[in-house]
Length: 120
Image (cartoon, rainbow, N blue to C red; front, top):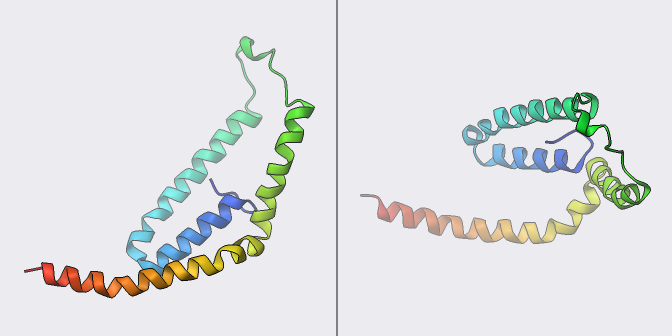
């Protein structure tokens, strides 16, 4: 699920932009999936965080301990750092992605001519 301001939002957005650049018809099928995932995750968030429990067996459960907060805090910082300022992380992989795109683009005409030769 991609909440705005988080790392998954940046990833989902970049995937959708790249998909629409490559093939608008196929990428349009991804939009309902993203919408359904958002609805499902918001409903899950509502039930888990704000829903409470009627199960008496859950009465003994406690919130996070200090140790768990210390362990999860750096991960939470990275989730929002990447979501709010992804440029430094994208810059690190820019050269390798450019090289990969160049390789795929160079092989695409050969694959198209091979497919054309296979058709009757």
